[in-house]
Amino acid sequence: MDAWIEKFIASLRFERDASPHTIRNYQSDLEQFRDFLLEQEKRAGRSPSDARSAVAKIDLKSIDNLRIREFLGHLYERRNQKSSIARKTAVIRSFFRFLERSGAIRKNPALLVSAPKIPKRLPEVMTEETVGNFLNDLELQAEKAEEEMQWSLRRNVAMFELLYASGLRVSELVGLDFEDINFTERMLRVRGKGKKERLVPYGTKAESALRAYLELRVRRFGKAELKRGQGPVFVNVRGGRLTTRSVARLLDRSIRHFDGNLKLSPHGLRHAFASHLLYEGADLRAIQEMLGHSSLSTTQKYTHTSIKQLLEVYDKAHPKA
Image (tube, rainbow, N blue to C red; front, side, top):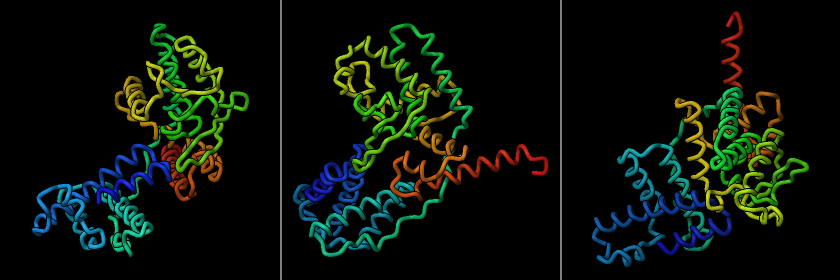
């Protein structure tokens, strides 16, 4: 079974260009499912004592929908969240779909297994005023900082301004190279999910933040990469490309410094980008294009957030509300 899991993970990495985070989750979920099957075999007295032989002996064709449901029941007993169980169900479905396409099994048993229904929750979106105040506060910190700290603060301002200005995923932000920026047109070439490329504009505020950061970056690391138009735009203290986790940590630290009661993730700035555009009357199709959503239904969740905001404004402002 392990060999097929490795083949499946390889297909995610090289054919579907899945993110490292997605690959880690898929591998972890499938290994958990495998361990559950091994435990079943052991209880039934069918498992060899050698662990490697036991894994190899798992007959993929013998795994039916009942065994998958037993695994989900096991997760419920361990009080896993419904969202976690739904994700693991989707991973198992995807794995067995891969096995069916590869000829390892004749039918996909996971198709007969339903995932738990998860109640839809509207994402909490920061107001335009709060986002603006946060970014302005970070800008002031950069202006007042000592020279040694200035470049990293300018980098943070540029990153968060771009996330909000262009609605980028954090993986798309850290994947930006110099050649992806058209400074004349203020456009970014973004590589999204499934290697799909799209062009996204950014505004004057983000432009100023980006130029201020790059000026200090050249002083610190030199201008060789800029001349060649290559290399990562956002780097760590050693000049290496930043990771998605690093950006999340930097944003969390910055927002707590601004207001200890607020929570904001890089994806929260993407939510704010879409919701604020929609609230100001932007076309949903245009927002879909900028976000890089393949389906309009994914983008439509922002309409619910916008309606919620409108109702809150109505309740506060209308004399007869």
